Length: 303
Image 1: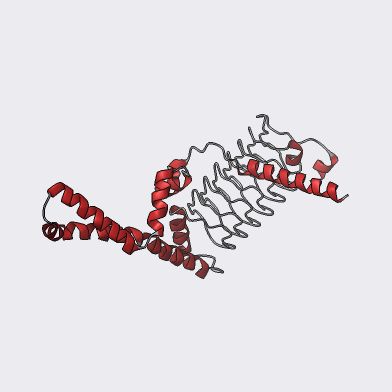
Image 2: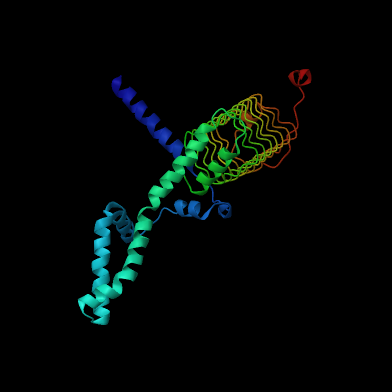
């Protein structure tokens, strides 16, 4: 009996792993021009082994040791090139060597300066908690996203983020409950497992993004653009989704009970038609390109 339970548990773990691979898979994004240079660099994970080794060495050695090595190498090459006496080399090299060492010190202190900037930006966001309107919070969020900083589990509940641009944001398990997200842009974003209960997102735009396992109950995303995005296993119960663009979206496992889907476009979407029919689907475009016409029934006429 225990052996059977172990096998079932292993099978379940294997299924969950396969499911997560499918959910995290992203289509070929053609919107990278919306990302900052730093965001694009962070998404390119391939580095040469030599570069990785040198980078690791540079950041893990003391500044004194790096300065000493640079000084020795500098004097050696200066001597090899000029054949001057050591004393002349020292006097003639102080200025250029000082400049090189100053640049090295500046580079080594960059992470600390960034850390201070990130801390101040996050402090600004935390300080605006409970305040609906905060210009400082919007600027801090945009700055952190531009730097490619991961913002997982950030609490933005009841915030006014109308019109904000957070393209490429990494914010899994974020709290957007009751947020004003009207006309916000989050293309190429990863908002997996986000809480959007009661959020107001009319005109919201997120193409080639990931909002799988999200909670959108009682939210309003009328006329949003979710094309080519991942919404697998998301909950849209009682949500207002009229006129939404779901073209080529992944919607397997999503729930639509009581959702208003009239006029929405599901052309090419990967979705269970039976699940779609749990919502109000009149005049919506189905995955095959046809327009849904409400079936006449007593239940329909009672509405």
